[in-house]
Every structure is written in C-alpha cells, then in structure tokens.
Length: 145
Image (cartoon, rainbow, N blue to C red; front, side):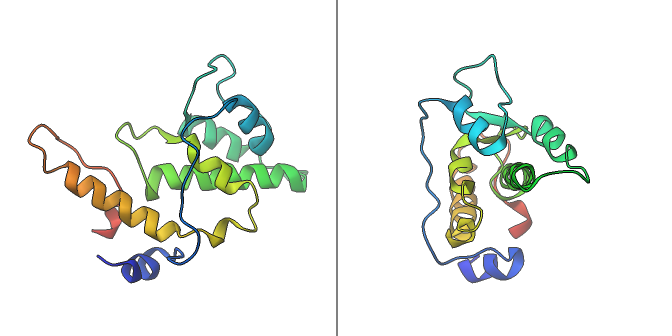
C-alpha cells in the first residue's frame, strides 16, 4: 500500500501540511462551541472525543433555513464523523478524537493537509499493533486492504 494508492482509492491529498493535532486542550468545550456552535459534553470538562451519536444528531439539524455559519458547523461535524468512522477509527469505534477538530477551523485550508499520509500511517501503526499476541482486533482504514 502506497500513498498513491491512498490518493487513488480515497481521493485524499497526499501532499501538503502534516496532519498533527493538539494533544491537550485548555478548554475543550470552548473549542467545540467555537467550531461546532455547541459542546457535546457539557458536563464533562475533560472529554477528548466526540461521540458519533452526537455528530449524527448535529448533522441532522440541517434544514432549509440553515445559515452559512450553521452549515459550516454541520460540515465540520460530518467531516469529523468521516475521520472517526472511516478514515482513522479507534478501538472503541464510537467516537472521534477532538484533536482533528482544530484542523477544520478554516474549511478552505483543510484540503491543504496530507490526510492520505495520516490515514496510511494510522493503518500501518495498526498493522504493527495487531502482531502482538494479546490483540484481537484491528482499527484503521480497512477498506484500503
């Protein structure tokens, strides 16, 4: 599997800025309010992932009277869901890490990141992880296999 395979199969950019995220946030709720116009975990100050159920509900809020700002929030929620469910799923399979959200702050520059490289690196890391005898499942973008 090469970067070119990822670009062809998934249509993701393989050139550009690396996909890196902030591993800790001073105020996760403020980040969510700023980029999604609400916070999924109002009672949990230390959440690090956004549940798919919350993202799907956010996507369903789209209506005929949606403003441009609301549309941008729904687009970010949809992209976050795609990152966590298809491109870079985690072991739980029910949420996406919050570290990807700041990369979507400006949707016009989100394509400038090398998403394909991040997806392939995640898959390779998972392929290494599953060689351990105690590991019973695999994560990552398995459609590439």
